[in-house]
Length: 553
Ligand code: ACM
Image 1 (cartoon, protein in one colour):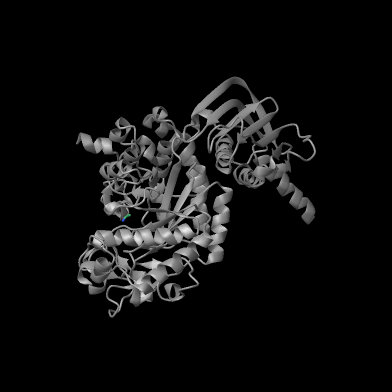
Image 2: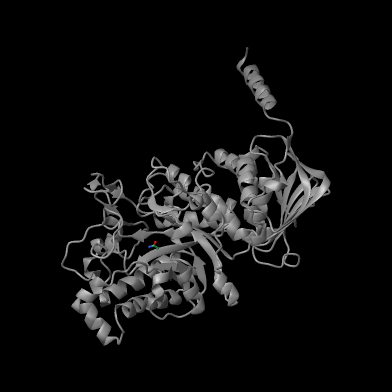
């Protein structure tokens, strides 16, 4: 047989292997559950290779995104054209329309499948991306030549304005491609914020031009703890570990995220969690004559976790570095950490004590507030507002500061009562680095127990605030992933799935629509197949390990 004949035979066999027609996924499986769905009794729109994407110019990027996602998911290659150009002659269209009249809320979309076309309307990038996510959930996860999308009318919008996931890239760092994948996971879940934890005691992970030793020294540690930090004796490997994302790489991630409606909030953690900083520039430490190294262990606090000294070099450093990073990120908000700043160093340091006295500060807590206010001022010059962990409220702060609460309800309530907007991110149950089972053979994690049902049943708005009509101060919630015990991308996925899917429904769907039994049904029919399609790892034993079962014991 001639080679060309052989090729066409292979092609014919391949084509036969592609199912010609596939029914769409069920509207009942859409996750997170949409706010309003009106199903039609019959009717559908056929999307095949002749269908066309027609988009208003505001959504050119999202049209490209939809095109790419459809090819990846179904093999369907659709043409696309801007709506103001010639009228589409395609038998069926997927129309991406800008409509500020019909769409009366931020991040809202409508998806209407009727007549000849599928139409998504939105008035912002987020809304369009979420409409596209919903549409993609109506397509099968396999190569097809044609899909009959069932007639439906969906009107959908988020319950909370802030829907975030955090990732610590310090304790372990992940390749740029995985950061993008993580952003894809967020977009699928209709989340809108990626909190990128870029600096800590164990390393600096972002390129800084003005202070190059942050990268040449601060980005590298000589070894890494093996096993749990409480294990005795502690064991370490002997591998130099580290690296950092270059500014070009960061820009690439920002662009990638923007196309998917995701805002990136960078975190530079000060004035504690600064061992990598002072390893590079010891003059910023309360013990400038000590030799500091980038930390190699976890669970550090107090005696190990040295803090920045309030001196002219430190404030010059903070202004320069925060402004350099602020110029890179378009986000309105910038996270300055502020957690777990041990006061014992300032107490023991004559320079810090003199500073407290000279500046009429009440005590070390007042000094912490002073640091936060200084940095807030540097960031304000770049048009940015500040987020910090809830400990920054140990002193009085301007209410324009957003509080990320990793404590319990109590801290969230206190912050709201003081007039701060709050993002709830309590260790229980939103730290996804905590165990999701009590199986002694489960992969090493942090001591807590945050199984799937605890995440799904989490209510971001405390009753106390609702009763006081202060519920509007809770603007959303976030799942956190600290990576001390998460050394691979596979483990990241194992820890976040399916808990991130549960959180997405808490954040997106109307409270009264939440139903754990139905959520578990959808996990099986639609979401786990999606993880599998992504080739992502996940924790499979979520039915066996629940908070409810523990409570009954
Ligand atoms: C934190 O867990 N220290 C924010």
